[in-house]
Image 1: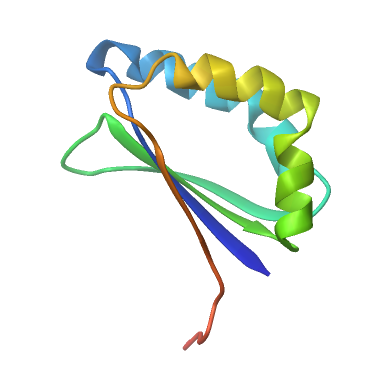
Image 2: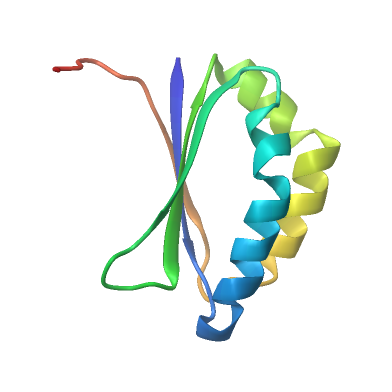
Length: 98
């Protein structure tokens, strides 16, 4: 399993635009082959900073999403709203304690 976290910093006046894009596309993203989980987090103290947290079956599935029509529509529209360059990282879970 691959854990993907993407930090996005938006222009203050574009927050609602981003939320609308996410709302319109969240199901299509979550329903991509190999996407196991999707969350959107908003920073409590800096509301113009968001992170997506997604779980993917493997990196191949993530890459197929990046080549998909959904990504081709969502990413350019989202990217136009940024105040800073996004930061993305991929992780592998080592431990989980419950």
